[in-house]
Image 1 (cartoon, helix red, strand yellow):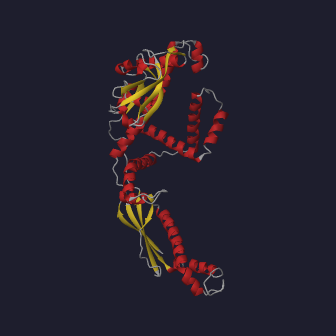
Image 2: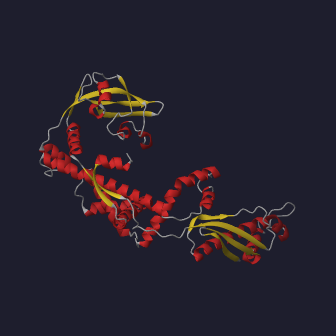
Image 3: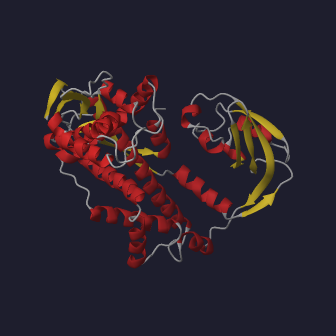
Amino acid sequence: MDIKRVAIDAVNETIVMNVVHMDYKGQVAKRINEKLPLAQVKGFRKGQVPKDLVEKQYGKGIKQEEVKKVVDLALERFIQSERLNLLGTPLAKENENIDWDAEELTFEFEIGLVPNFEIDLEAKNNIVKYIVTADDKLIDGQVERIQKQFGKAIPQDKVEADSDLTGTFTNEEKGINNTTTISLSTFNKEAGDKFIGKKVGDVVTVSTKGLFEDDHQLMDYLKVSHDDVHGLDIEVNFTIEAINGAELAELNQELFDKLFGEGKVASLEDLKAKIKEDAEAQFAQQADQKLLLDVQDFLIENTKFDLPAEFLKKWLQTVGEKKLSAEEAEVEYARSEKGLRFQLIEGKAMAQSNIQITFEDLKEFTSGAIRQQMAQFGQTNPTEEEVQGIVARVLSNQEEVKRLSEQVVAAKLLDLFKEKANPTTKEVTYEEFIAASYGE
């Protein structure tokens, strides 16, 4: 057998394989002999069929099967020996006119190669690392929400300025049908005034344009997507199902202990400090995620390399349960190209910086995630034995291992980017961060 690579360009090659009779004749002969006692041909008793008739009836099919085995094995070994770093899998070039009686058979396979490139993590950039602070407005609003949540709901006959409404937003054309509870003060004044004096069962029609101070609240209350939020100008109906006022909960030690554990918060000042601490911890995670996305976009934009695009589009038509048309593969490639580019950049960044993921890294990360989750449910001091027992169960699931491994990689890359990309630090309020995040 002769097998070789034929370069087309830096990321596209063809593997050409010439298979001769000696590569498969022994296995074909063995299969024919195994077939002799079982062959059935009209006019002959089972097991008495002449060998030349068996070869005539079954030989071509057996030869094709054995040649395929030889080709598949040789292709796999060649890729390994050449240490080819492939994108997708080899695609056999179709040859409907192959002469199976020929002494030498030629097979060709198209392959797409991972491009060779370098990345500069320290390149000049305009990336910003946001430090998001909880301002007094946010903290005071959270204090009021806590007092309402743990206070006493007082049913009201009609809507008043301090009412909380439970009801359903609907708009048939946009498929909006969401039941929610909302404070009247959440609406803008014009919309809020429409509700004053209304009763259970009444329907109030409002415009989504400027309905809330922050358009993103449409996502919470109407369950529209972020893509639909900006510029959404439709009318929605709100059917009132319940009207309640609230007797605010007293800010006392009993409430503090209920919320945070005995003795951890002892005053309004402590409560505000705790709210600020918890909020800013959440904001830090969101800011890190934005930083990671911004670095990804920067690296994708500034790291230039070619991909075997046409090969990958053809390959996409062959994978998956549902075979794609050429047009569908074109759409799928356009959708996934950015992710593929960053996947390659990510691998290069890890290799250049010698970042490796060990099982100990995975255990440590999983342990931290479990402790954080347990704390959210009030289990603030689990034993090491309890945590490690959960870690063992989680890491016995391969899907969980894959998911958590991706998070560990993201965390390590984030640390790397913070160090190498040298982003500009900027302190902002949460409202300013949201505006920066969504380009508003």
